[in-house]
Image (cartoon, rainbow, N blue to C red; front, side, top):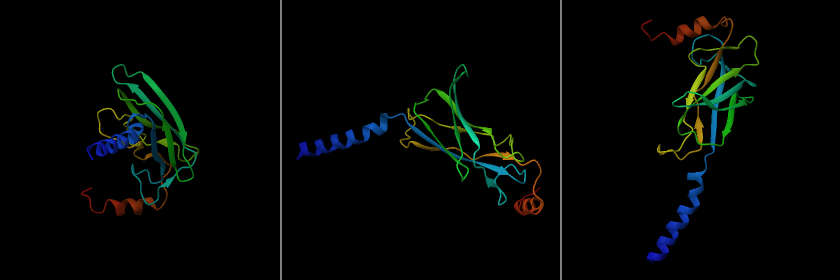
Length: 159
């Protein structure tokens, strides 16, 4: 009986071992156009197809770039980038590269990058799917309805 239990435990450990040792990360996030220049997503926001996004990792001590890869958003404004190496001693970020929309191609200074953890080293995270915060571009001129929309969003604030 004890041998059977040990054998079952060993088999289950062997089956999850590849998940623990594989340094493959699926980074997912989205890119939007801030049509109201609000600095956040609103009901007037739309997501950008064909925006280029980069993942950059820098050495923690020297801040030299050690990894860079680009991806493109799909029809829903979502990017999916596969990273094959564990970056446990690196600082990694998703960054905006370019927008295909001429009237919405100025990166929002507060939403133009997103930190991302690309390691399993001593952090307890076993999942290979890592979500980055949404990143956005500012529209050149706010839409006419934005004044009313922002008034609604700020109605409960002290501003």
